[in-house]
Image (tube, rainbow, N blue to C red; front, top):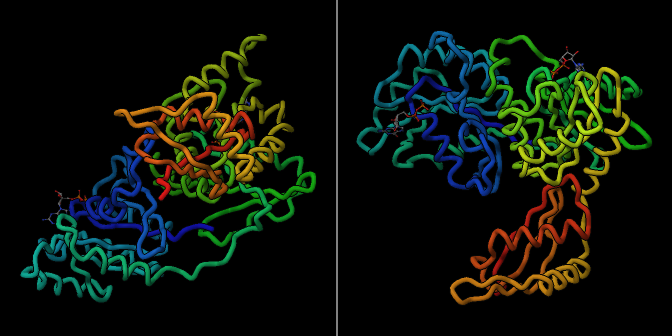
Length: 436
Ligand code: GDP
Ligand code: GDP
């Protein structure tokens, strides 16, 4: 089920990124060092009153060398395209400006709900500054202060009130949803066509429950699949769609709706930094991952090439050490028949549940083999472990003191779990909790 999307729009310097960070909070503390994830935080999940949603800071979307006003307009259009609710942000110290009116004009034309926020109202004396903003025609302006964290609750109340009623479910649980992500020209569209070429497409191009999603449903060997389109793949045209951060945004939305993510790499070009960044998103989102090396037909190779390529991938994507690698060619269809069975296997592992008693046998064996570490004279004690979630498989370990659970010991436990139960292709999470 996809979460509602909120976008913040407004001219530069009104405080969009300040408010974005306030709303997102420290909740998305980055546990692992996944490149790129912290740097451009223009898209993040957030929570208010038990409702989770995604939020976009459109100000962070770099449109390129266009004049400022064009950039602001395009950012507003992205917000209209992507969001369920738009926060229109203004600066209470400047009053209504021509650029605000420009944004307003674009927002009038959409039928998306707009919440008007007047920022930099740092103290009660400044509240009267908001009256000017009624003229923008979006109802009652909400005074906020990003620096002081004032009014954010009122703002979010107004935003959440506009969320669409949730549909219960997008697809049945046994349908495998996957997407292909990767840089432009790695062959994502060609792969989709090659996969579908052999299939009878049952339903295609459903304008799904989510905006702009073009999902393709097909069946093979009794298993139903949905390819979640990253839109960049088929819907091209608007200027901003070619900008990098915009395509990242589309990829993130597709990842979120998928069980399994195919990270596509071009064999001709090898791995570059951007591939790592893209793969980092899939890992971070806790989805099953398959690394697909495409255009395998196009390179010179001998019997060592595949091993070398694999080693290179493993070096670059250490955080994806669980992901299977498949070498294919969309052009010659080489090894393409392997792809769906691998996706199916990863999807099963992603949803796998392990019984508590079996898990604890493994845990006790692991502790016997490698005694728990000590820190400042205190030894970590592990009582028991239980799997609390799937997609991804998540384990809670009850211990005397979570602080004593060192990363390396957690990693050791993860490896024992993987060695015993498989879990190929899926990240797994281990959470240490104190036993009361
Ligand atoms: P953006 O360009 O719209 O993303 O704006 P920023 O979030 O980068 O903020 C622009 C400037 O306004 C920064 O110097 C912020 O520190 C400042 N600012 C943001 N919110 C407030 C606020 O509530 N009060 C005051 N006085 N300054 C703020
Ligand atoms: P996308 O931007 O990732 O969707 O990439 P496309 O599917 O549009 O492919 C980009 C280019 O690579 C096109 O010219 C394709 O014909 C070519 N291409 C795609 N897959 C293969 C392949 O397996 N081998 C070769 N040699 N070329 C391919």
